[in-house]
View (cartoon, rainbow, N blue to C red):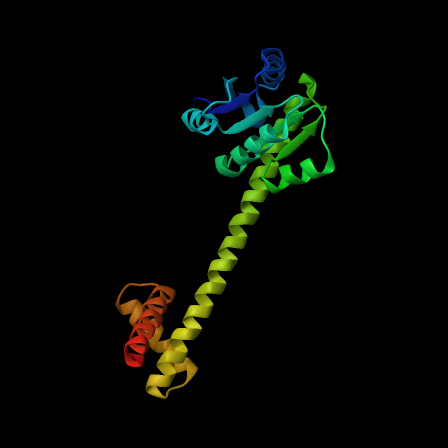
Length: 206
């Protein structure tokens, strides 16, 4: 069975520092149960997002030395849009910039830590933190969606109860049975019912 290749993108304008990162990655080859490494480099920051999409990396390592505010903001924008595990190496920083990196979704923000012997552990932490955060985001989105579904179903039940004079349980049974007959989700049917009621109500008010 062939090994899966872990595609890593190094973004660094400094060839020497990029070589340190790559050497650390080569030493770490075999991380994640024997995966092989496929390493790509970007040294020109022009059209950065387009070039990242072209590489489609599994992990992004950004080395900025002493970045300007504009450069940092550009990298934070990359982090927000790329949705990949990202480790960012800088020589100096402050608490506000660290917080901005966290807000932007940077998985590991490493200050004065570019040493080849640390790359493996940083890579592991970067991937682990990204997946943990991604799971949390997914769970939050599912909870938000479930809450929105519950609200729209309650609205649909209220409409049916008003129209039929029946109970809440009877309204839900009717919703569920109709959804099953139409091979639709209850929340989807409820949205259609609420939208139709809103249209009818708007028409009656004219």
